[in-house]
Figure 1 (cartoon, rainbow, N blue to C red):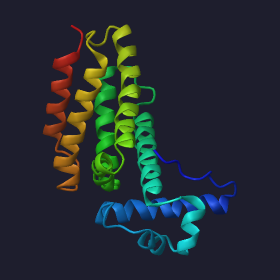
Figure 2: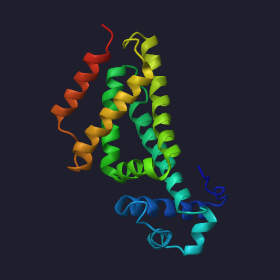
Figure 3: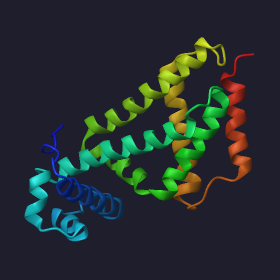
Length: 198
């Protein structure tokens, strides 16, 4: 996986780099990696084409960096939404809502992550492994508190990631709205009945 160039030291450089990432999110989301060009990204960002290469060596490197940024941002939103919640079931519900809200705000997350499987398989796997490891820690803590069953936590994490992604795609991406309350209740019941310690 090719690394982007060193992050800029000045606030102006950081802003320019962020404008390029924001533009790349829009262009890759709308056109796809193969059909997007560095020129279009720089046009959207409002910078000269040569400026791009100060921050990124090529199109693939900005794509990789964008996956990392989106991963960080969605995990940050989930952490904020679940901060201070000690009950696993409540945390699951709050996390789902935060994830769905993120998709409504930034639907290109789906398109970019799905492209990553074919653009850079290493970053695609990294994205899900990073999600899984974070999830795993929270689930492990809940097992120790005897809130949930002692199951294979990595398998459980990937199950929940898959559920959240497909439900988000069905409502937030395709219909551009939060899933109805009945859907959220169905998800909560599935999780509660499936893993809650009795």
